[in-house]
Amino acid sequence: YLAPTTNFSYTANPTISHFIMDPTGTITNGAVTLPAVMPDGAIIRVSSTQTVTNLQVTAAGAATVVPSANVTLTAGTGVEYFYHASETKWYKIA
Image (cartoon, rainbow, N blue to C red; front, side):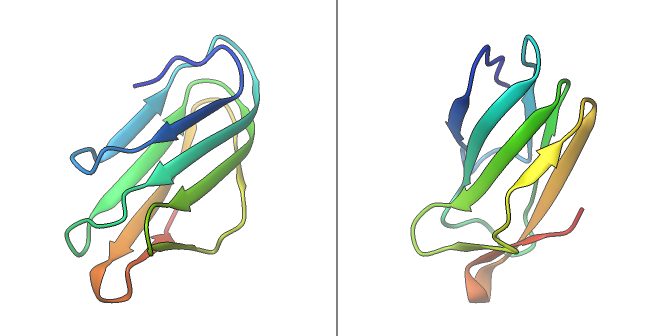
């Protein structure tokens, strides 16, 4: 859980499966770093109660995010990433 009031950066803990943001209003830029290593098939969902115009999702270490494009979250929506351990890749699935 994070309640940013301005642009933010957050590194996800490998023990979470859902990261919830509750900003005080629209956020222009945010950054979330997914863990470098997770169990195969792990899913992390990132959601927000307010709009995040430009959310950059990256991965720590040698892991990568596919596709690597930034996303926009409108209020009340989220995005999900699936971890494929043998490739060390996080795939955007929703």
